[in-house]
Image (cartoon, rainbow, N blue to C red):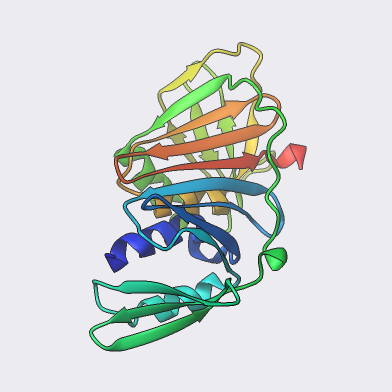
Length: 237
């Protein structure tokens, strides 16, 4: 297995430490996982093609440690599941004589990820271009204290970092939006989460969709993987 591809999969659910625990489901040369942040404000699903681990479900409790251990290995790695009485207890990762043993967690200690009973209609959609992604990430770096941004669905739609009723530093980014809900109101989103989602999927075509019911969906798809993230808007938490 190519280590960089496995690291890319991990990066997309780990989100720079926002999600530590996940269950990896492996079958048919694919790895997928459902995941949720500790505060349960964001959840998602990642499926990566062409990553081969023995069929099964494996609990990763401390992704930070797993990622650090993985970095020790060379680019091509072999992964074996070690079991006791048919129960997986660790992953043995090997490359050029180096062996990393990563403990697996009981699935009962991994946070349950709820299924959305009903996905609302999305009344606004924006294609995530490379230019927009770069600008948003740079804008967040320029205003690190801006923990939220506001989507303003006017005729000229804008994503505004640092939006407030008082006089504040702010950055307004124009976007080409398709607004199909004429009653769509402005929504406030966690900018820290959104920035990590963009950073972890940089280079892949994506889309943002917003529902007036208070749900934001971000999706990415290419030949290697597909990823879906659901975030609550702030006023609906």
